[in-house]
Image 1 (spheres, rainbow, N blue to C red):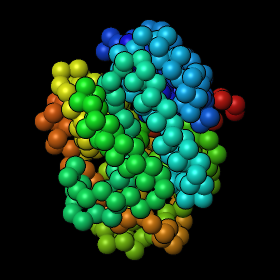
Image 2: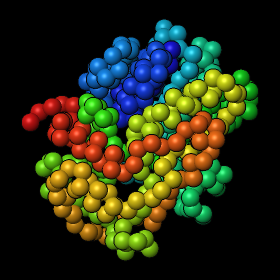
Image 3: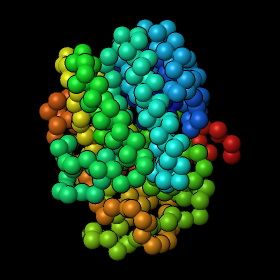
Image 4: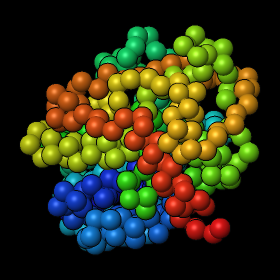
Length: 338
């Protein structure tokens, strides 16, 4: 049994599918503040298997411990967290409360229940401004925004915890830029309000929900002047969690591992690829650079291959095709109103 916090969210729901398909039993623990119950129903439909779903907040230590104990889980995959960079800068205490204090409560519940295997959802934001590219796991850690800092604080906490008790088995997975959707079109990214990430914004323009895309800066030192990022298909990312659990089942330790495609694509690369996949135009307007945006970054993902036997299998075309299928089938997300 795997206990998945935030399992109704974008990455969490796709990971639950892959866990179920791999034969694991799953309990989801989610407060549904930024996700929909419908996602959990669709996960079970895709996998052809049921899973337990518990509504709860990770900051509620008593409820969390009770749910974890009742699940009988042997490992935890921890997704529950706030993730909007701009919001984190405007409301830092909200992010420390949820992302850091919530993780403290989770670790306390795990210790009380004797569960000491954890896969943690971290982020490439812990690397800060690139000193060298691609980012390797031994790059200096220095977050440049509050969201990234909460991830780094939790990473440090996990390393300290493992040093204090070597029985803990911890996988820290540093994501790059997850995009795409399940090939069924049943689950995908469903941001509340204005999307913070590029791909859902592009998809909403293509489907007619938004008039145009804002491209923030076209004077970066990149091939076409727009920012370059490492985009990874969410299903490849989800499979990385299954591989990480397999690894931790056979190995002790605390490991930090990049999950990225290992190649960078620009904003305009993504726009053109999405236009090709959807057959729809994606009009855009160029605006000034946003403060804090980096020119370019991408991952060295060779450690994930060496430790987990994991590598990406889905390229940019598939990322765009699957995103469009999800958006076209669900133009208003899980709510479904036309």
